[in-house]
Length: 99
Image (tube, rainbow, N blue to C red; front, side, top):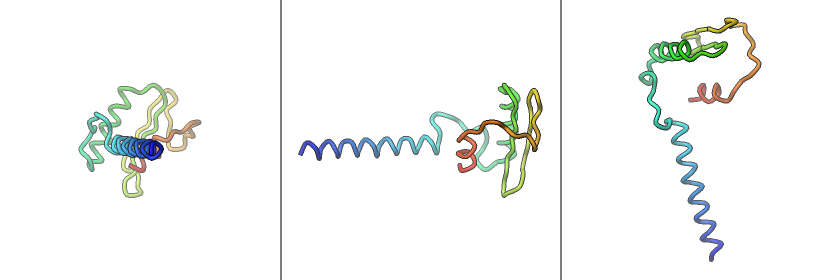
């Protein structure tokens, strides 16, 4: 009986944790959006202003909407362009593209 209770408590805790992590991943945790959802132009301009203010390296910002380039912005010590190959990548790009 103790085994079943332990299994039930563990399963309940795991489900609760999964729900919390899922909510945070989809909705953010105490973060305000930088633009009204669905307003691509405002988002692009807000993101570019943040990049200009906080940039510490080379940045290539490209916003794609409907399969076409909506906005692009490049900045850095060695200003990148559409042909620049970056040595590293991160999951944030995939998550952002998915979300």
